Length: 142
Image (cartoon, rainbow, N blue to C red; front, top):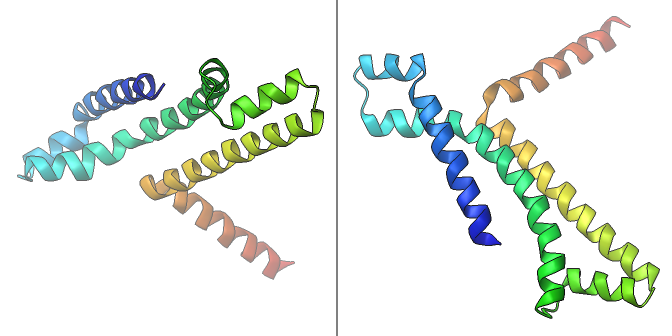
């Protein structure tokens, strides 16, 4: 499961990096005489991370659902196997608890991805700052 996810992330990374390498800001940075390593890490990789982070989030859901099947087939003790055993034994509180834990894990991963978006893309952070300033001005006016 990890190899399939790693291959998908590598494919996202490669295509995103190639797409960013063709942008005008990279040509401008080269024309200014910046070092190639600086261009790659500061300009290209940071902008290429946006679709990569999004891809990692969607792959996490696939990995969670895949663990249920793999744990059941290979009798690996884990949350997926516990959920399948609860379904077979008609132990509904156990199934609800396992689904709840998986939902919390999924939600936390998407929260981390949103925070990573704000770190990588400064326009997202600026958008939230501007909205908070607007709401403060509206409160002062009212």
